[in-house]
Amino acid sequence: MSRSAERLRLLIDHLDRSAAVIAAPTSAQTFAYRRPQKLRYTVDTDMLTPEQRLFYEENGFILIKNLVSEEDIDMFRKEFERICRQEVKVPGLVVMRDVAIVNSEFVADQKAVSKLQDFQEDPELFRYCTLPQILKYVECFTGPNIMAMHTMLINKPPDAGKKTSRHPMHQDLHYFPFRPTDRIVCSWTAMEKVNRQNGCLVVLPGTHTGTLKEHDYPEWEGGVNKMYHGVRDYDPQQPRVHLEMEKGDTVFFHPLLIHGSGMNQTQGFRKAISCHYAGAECYYIDVNGTTQENIEKEVKEIAARKYALSDEITFQDTWAVRGRLVQGERISL
Image 1 (cartoon, rainbow, N blue to C red):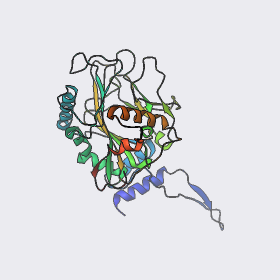
Image 2 (cartoon, rainbow, N blue to C red):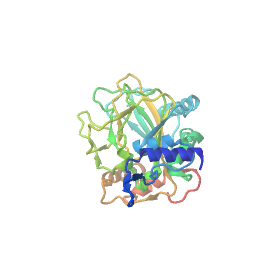
Image 3 (cartoon, rainbow, N blue to C red):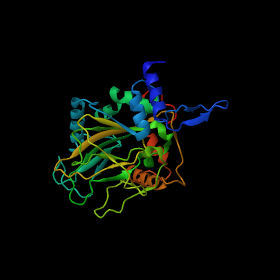
Image 4 (tube, rainbow, N blue to C red):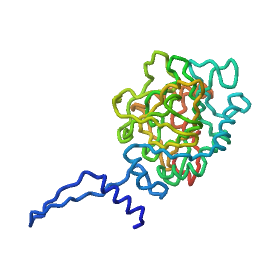
C-alpha cells in the first residue's frame, strides 16, 4: 500500500464515527470494529491529497490557489472585451444583460453585459476549458473521459440599488438533464480579486449530500435576471462560507451544492470564468414530471425563438449541441 493510500485509510478510520462495539462471547473484553468508508464523490488519480478528498467528501467544494496564470486570465479578459464591442461574433453565444444596469463597461448607451454563456465556439475563451492544470483536477471528479458541457464568463456589475446583481442560492443540477450527479463538477476561476464587497461566491457546505430541490424565480422587489432560478426551500440559518479568492484561484464544486453570490457593492465589475464538466459516460434523462420541468420549458422557448426552431427540439438537444470532448473518449453525452 502506498504512503498516500495508507494516510487516506487512517484518515477515513479516524473520521468514521459509526463504530460498532462488539463484545467477545468468552470474555468481558470489548473492541470497536469500523466498517471501511468508501469515498463517493472523488476518484483516485493521486492528484488530490487524502485530506483534500475528505474535505470535498464532507463539504462539496475545494479551493485551489493560483491555478490559472495571470497571462491566461488577461487574454480571456481581452476576448471578453472584443465580444462586448462586437468585434467578434461567436455562433451560439448567449449574451445576457443586467435588468437594471444601463451603462456598459465598453460600449456607450448599451446595457451592461452581465454574463456570457455557451462560448464553446470561441477558441480563446474555450481554451480555459482545456487548460491541463484544470483538467487534472476535473478528472478527480469525472474520471478520465471528460466533456465540457456548460461555459460561462460572469461579469457581475456594480449594483444599481435594486440588488439585481445578486445571484439567488441555487443548485446547478437544476439546469442539467444528465446524470449521474456525482460525475459532474464545476470549475470557477476568479479573474480578479473576489471578496464580500464585490459579491464573492457563498456556499452551504455539505448540502451536496442532499437531493435536488425545487427552484423558481425568487420574489425580489428589484426584479431578477433571466434564468436566475433559486432554491425555494432551504434553511437560511444553515452555516455558510464566503469564498474570497485571488486572481487565478479556482474552486471546484459539486452540482448539488447550494450556492449563490451577494451584491456587488463596488464601482467596478467582478469577473470570473467557469465550465461545468461531466464524465463522458454520463447519460441524458427525461425531466418530465420532475422539479426541472420549469427550466426545461424556459430553455426550449429561448432556443426556439433564437434559432427559429419548432417545438420538436428537446431539452437534451439543447445540451447535446453544446457539449465538447476535452479529454479521453466521447461515450454517451
